[in-house]
Amino acid sequence: MRIDVLTIFPRIFEDPLNESLLGKAQERGVVKINIIDLRDFAGDKHKTVDDRPFGGGAGMVLQVEPLDRALGSITEKDASPHIILTEASGKQLDQKLVKELSGKKHLVIICGRYKGVDERIKELYKIQEISLGDFVLSGGEFAALVIIDAVVRLIPGVMSKPESAETDSFHSGLLSYPQYTRPAEYKGLKVPEVLLSGHHQEIERWRKGISLERTKKHRPDLLKGGEFE
Image (cartoon, rainbow, N blue to C red; front, side, top):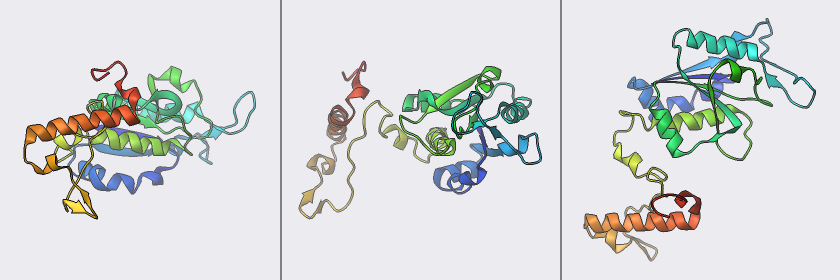
């Protein structure tokens, strides 16, 4: 997979993308992540990429011209990348959407900033708007990092044990079951006996039951319309 990120703050990505799974995935050549400075596509010597909104109001808006030039430089080499804009009004990111994105060959992520982007860029290109939730971040760079991390870990060859991802919360539509490790007892708190029994079917049954209980208690919305409702 190839991921291009359009941003006016490229340094935000330097350390996170070179650590842990993301760093290893790039070293193995499973994914190529390219950080593009939007200011390189500005039309003046000051590298201006934003301006005041028409109609008045507080804040600044990312201009359509540098965005168009940047996207054009990408689409002239690949005519059909999947373009994402981090946007508060977008579809909320969930595991189902992450799985869909992990199947794409080429993602382009536009990091929203200020009051947003000039609406005309959405008319020039087919763009999927994605939000992390009903809260405000200082910039789309942080949302982009979340999207990249969530997507890349599902790409075949990234995780040494792919089955680990299959037991994560939300993968099956339920929250994950509780985890325990040594010691078997600590300050009077014991690990559930079934986990020490060695009976794999009983362990699996216990884990599914606990996952369902946790989901009903903490995220009942996940059960609506599903097989567990």
